[in-house]
Image 1: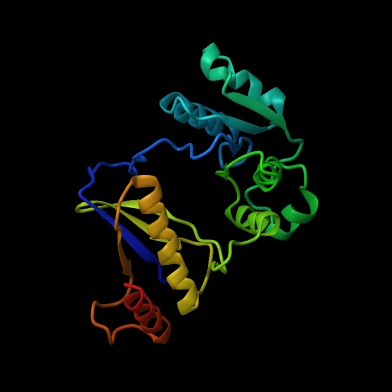
Image 2: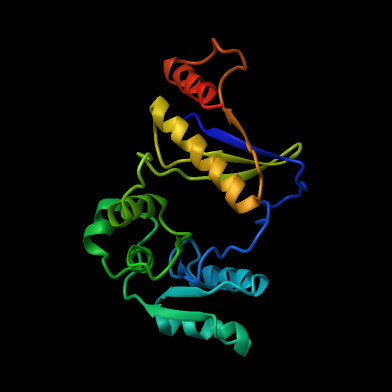
Length: 231
């Protein structure tokens, strides 16, 4: 795996990921949260979602999961915050060790699938899940498809750097990539840095074994040429 990177300079460096430069809300639609998945399940997912809800007064959430489990975790919310949260029932949970193909075929009423269905149906602007990564990528590809010009999904994360943070991708969605796909990852990372963190012109880099143009295999060299030509 040879990730691409987008670097944000001048940001405050701390031990956590950078905070968005603006509200997470880009439309009137809520964000769908898979409330049941992850190593620790709703006991971690729901409080984390509510913490973000309290920080962003424009945010609305749909918590997808088993109401008998999720509802008690909302007891501490004040009336104003509670009005911005609704719970959508889902009877199944995708296990962390479940095969992606089985999740697609057998877990059509899982919290992960129902959250993605909300996005597909235009009822949510995005889906957030801390669950089975392979199942999430495969189900999202199956339910939502890909936008024109993007062949594969990618996983992105922010890591601390000397000048703030670096957004790195792909971090595990793909075992290999073509030059075109590496270029597409660079475009997606740049879009995140610009759209979420307000960077007018993010710096894009290609992780390689050296800085010279002759370094790296044919895939990396071809991706480098594509990036250079796009300036």
